[in-house]
Length: 477
Image (cartoon, rainbow, N blue to C red; front, side, top):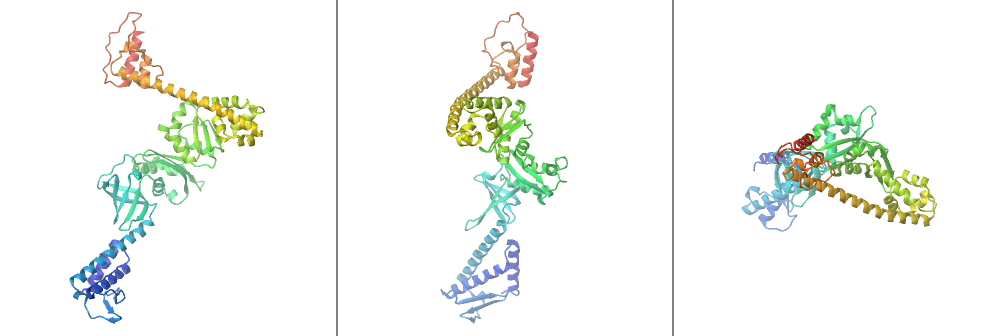
């Protein structure tokens, strides 16, 4: 038996599979004992003992403590098959345990692999010597990989499934952003810059709040890099996902203001009882503060830990007026008391209904009876206000629907340019109008003039159509 060749094979397996060589030698000894028991057809587990010299590879067999002169090559086919099966099983167990030990320590770190295939929505990725799984829920929405593509992801979890080790990856987890910043920004890896909070909607937008322990290091500037070089690498890795870097502040008001950028905030009122922040912004900043489908305010709320409510000055003042009108009906409640509640962040009848009478009794120093009365009045007024708001919402949706339908009819050629007011038609096409289009019956021209222009083709661009219509209106004048 060529023991040197055997030891070279064991060295190769230990190196390729990252398994300790001593474990492989132990597997070899156990397989040899199993082969001897099969050869001699014995059930005694202690009858045979095998020892392999870790340097020379010399095999020593003993039976009942007495050395055996039998050469392992003399084993029959059945015993040899038993030896092979035991060796394969023990090697697989060692490899599985090695994977478990290695990747359990790498949970939360970034690994790079190669995309293999999709299996029922899950992406199979080859990383080093193991296959990993990225479930659909951990993938970035809309992101697709082809076989052979490079995949950079975070090790999310490692589970021993008995016959194999399951390694789960993620590209949607918020911690992936932190790990990418640690790779791209040395100050984050060195803990000079600390990531204080983060909120992410994978594939769309991320807000991350950072602070620096060194006054000489600008946390936001360091994360952005020269001309945005550092943040650009992270955005490219995430296929264009927007990343907002927010300057951390211990003051909740300043942090909320920073988190809502690029919108400009006029006033912030915090209600600690409800964990709610009422933010007042100008009308022209409202859509910017809310963001597309409410994304900006939603991420800001998750980043700061406050329930953020965005209002315009008109809505804010109207809420305070309704609150003042309602509470001053209670005997002993003055405008100064209402101002005190507003300073505490309770700026509407809905807030009073939610906080309850105990807070009013404590803050305004009124009797429990007056507190219960105030809450009851606010609850009744809240129902009326909610109904009014619902009606206004439905009316606004109805107007938008009519404008949209009118614009579609105009673009399809059902209306001609002279049938409608040019400004209204242009506003309807561009989605900025608030006046519904008139029915398709054309009024008589009071001046008896006609510019003789045929209506534009239905497939022209909407803005060009609007410009043409406005031009036609100028001629009719």
